[in-house]
Length: 280
Image (cartoon, rainbow, N blue to C red):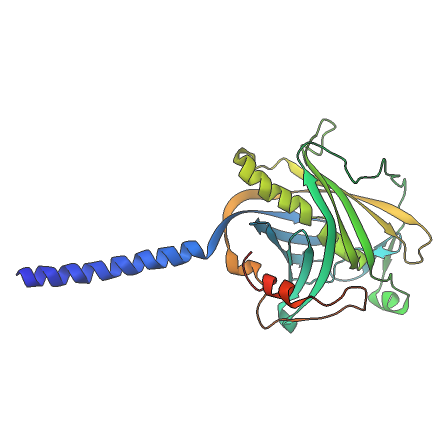
């Protein structure tokens, strides 16, 4: 009888040990982070961030005619099913269909929680009117495109941003060294997301919060370079929450190769590539 109980005890202990191992493995594969979603005029995104690394999934992108604002197409290169990985130095467009990625170097990324304006212009000239044109894709292909160039974004996260009495939670800036103008639609979310991830660690009582929005200004030259327009955007942040994220979703797959866009951005160095292949 004692032998039988001993055998039963061993038999019960093994599944318990296996369950503990599985729980430990599950815990190791996940991390505490923040998540939210945002819908713009022609683009919807799902955003996650943890441990100073973020991911932006394109969930919807409008098809059909192209809308130009002062001759600029603000549609990013990414399509539904693609996603972007980022930190404060790099923005990667990852394209699973082609097992490839495009790297955009970032600089001057900074944010604060005291409404500081370091690195900001004294003021922005906001245009009274922006010319909007709807064109067919063939017309874009036949016309000269804006060359990949620098993109600057100045932004602040606001509470009750739709009201005149809104409060600023965080303010910051970011530059992409060389990227198509449409990538501004993605780049504007990089530093605000890092700020929200930091805020979750500083004061988690902000989450969930349906009262937050992003105000951003992006100065961009027209295709001809004749003038620069300060494009202003206000976007509501939805379903902001603290959550557990899957760490594997924040690493660049090992078999994906880099696609270059001209000579403006040098290829990624091996040590940088190795860093993106793993969780930070």
